[in-house]
Image: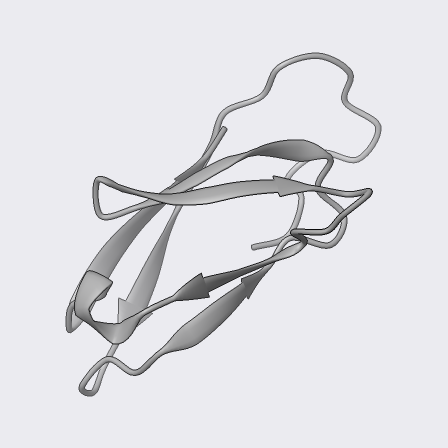
Length: 75
């Protein structure tokens, strides 16, 4: 997920969908370019990220994903 707005200051809620055509597999979400916040995948709190580390990449286990549309808001 790319940062929707460069240079934005203050709180931001972004939402996107991830479409999966085949059977879901384990994957990672790269949060480079994002500052600090949390990510939710299909109503499951995946975790938090922060540009200073240590968490800048979030692991998404296959059972959290479904074939078709997956909702991914980032706060």
